Structure formats: structure tokens, C-alpha cells
Image (tube, rainbow, N blue to C red; front, side, top):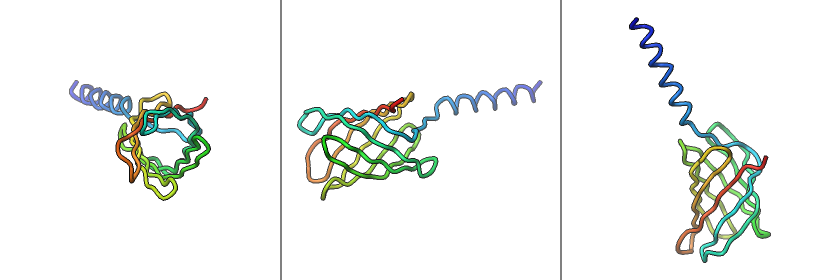
Length: 121
């Protein structure tokens, strides 16, 4: 009886842990965001996985291309990037179903913008 209970408890913990695990998929994402002044922008971002928790990312928005590295930690997904001479940081929350909701900032500027990525199907 005790062995059955322990086996059930271990199985239940495994199911709870896997239910909360978030992933980010490689692929092309639609980008919708707001600039530091509140104006909207759109574009695409392409994520290429380099390991289970790391990746490279390229954004194409408004005729501008920027490249960066990214990392998954729990339900947080962060990317550092270069845009011209500036360095930027974006932090997303992994919402599941291919949706990442985030905020970003860039060196030399005050404030932050928002950005959502949605995996193209």
C-alpha cells in the first residue's frame, strides 16, 4: 500500500512539473510592439534554438534588422540584442501556445516599450 502511494505521489509530482514547464519553439514569430514614445510597430522575429535553453534571434521591424542571443529560464525568456551602436534587452513571459509577452529597453534611452511575439502557424 505504501509503495503504491509513493509511486502515485511521484507520478503526480512529475505531471505537475511537466504541466508548468514552458518551452519556446524555433520558427518565425509575428511581432507587435510599442516604441518608447508609444507608437506601434510590427514585423517578424526568427528564433533558432542552439540548446534546450539558448537560442539566437533576429528581428525585422520597420525596415530595421537586429540580431541577438536569447535564453529560456522557467517561464521567463530574455534576449540581448544590438541595434546600430546601442545594446538592448527584452524580457518576455512565456504564455504557452506560441505566445511571448514582453517589455524591452535600449541603451541611451529612457523608459521601455512592449513587445508580443506570436508563433506563425
